[in-house]
Length: 82
Image 1 (spheres, rainbow, N blue to C red):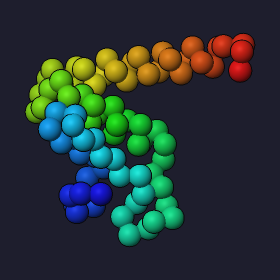
Image 2: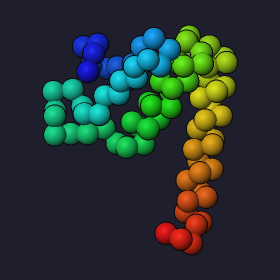
Image 3: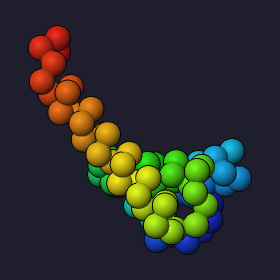
């Protein structure tokens, strides 16, 4: 994944034209990051589609999206179809 900075977990290029996520730990191809961390990174990067800089509006949107995600997980857990 680009850039080569191993501490970077995600990258949003061109306001969402490309969103890149680091799935594996640097220099350990067999070791994946936890799913929840990858998902949260994806939500973070998708927020950059609306707000480029890390400002108050960005963090407000990220918090809102996280809350919706938690609500959907709870709804899924309570569903009797599964």
